[in-house]
Image 1 (cartoon, rainbow, N blue to C red):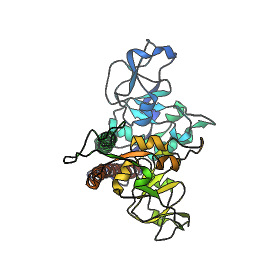
Image 2: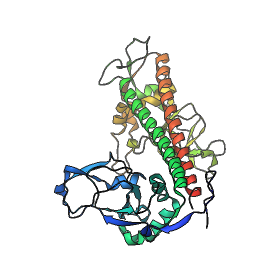
Image 3: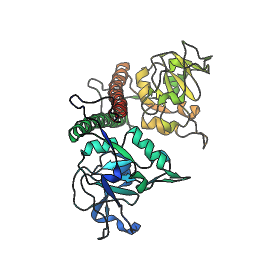
Image 4: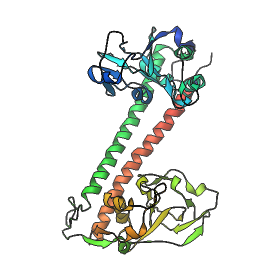
Length: 398
């Protein structure tokens, strides 16, 4: 019998392969319901997206429904499977009920599976999310424009079963990984929300002469200046090279202002506007996508970028100014319906509030740089943990 490549010390017993149908039975989700039954009532139901998104069901992601005696109440240890999706890769997604709760049911677009043998709940949750099991589900999906899966076919699928003690160790390991991923995701989102809030509070709003929140020691009114007075567009173009890699829209993570790949490894030669690290890049195509970058390297900006050179203004401050709601509102007064682009004439002639003090500009830029750094740290840690989880799912199961 084949065993996983990576195991916890002390476990040597061979794993078994057993059919789901030999270890439990199925039941249907809500049936005979109309839209008038939903949104009120004493009962709750596990939603489709709850099952789709969570290996272990989130009991906070339930909705109200009027219930009758014909419906099947869910229990701790039950497994829910989605039965339908627009792509075969998303059919048969599973989620485990973590605990008993009163009066909770399953949505109409899923079926339930109730094991008759004892499993570690976390182990069951993750073994059903492994690449090998997901391939089985994709293979069983049938349809053309919408794909469905037969619960009888699912019951024929085999899963690997170690001892209960080993199940517990494996399940707890992946639960801990998911807890860490969730922690960093939450911290990342909290920092993003703080940044959004401070962009509103640290820049004057509605014609005010000073912002609501300001660093100590600065008291002068901010001045109104045309954007063209504090930043100009670079226009020198050149072909990309080893020393000047090409930067395209798809290379930047929208709203985060960081690269998603090593652009120095690109081999294709493309022509674009030269930048040398002293400018700020703003994506003028579909400005609502919020593509921007504060590069510390040289390259050529290919496509619909503005390469903005600060004029008597701090670069980091300019980079934060273009992320404010006021700049966003002006940039999105754009021309074109299918491929809207920000209008330079409009943006360049619009007045924005600017601190008179270069020092205050720098402090604002540094503050938001620290927030961006925290966001990047949490996002990278989250990405690393997800890669580790994927690797371990491939190697800690058969």
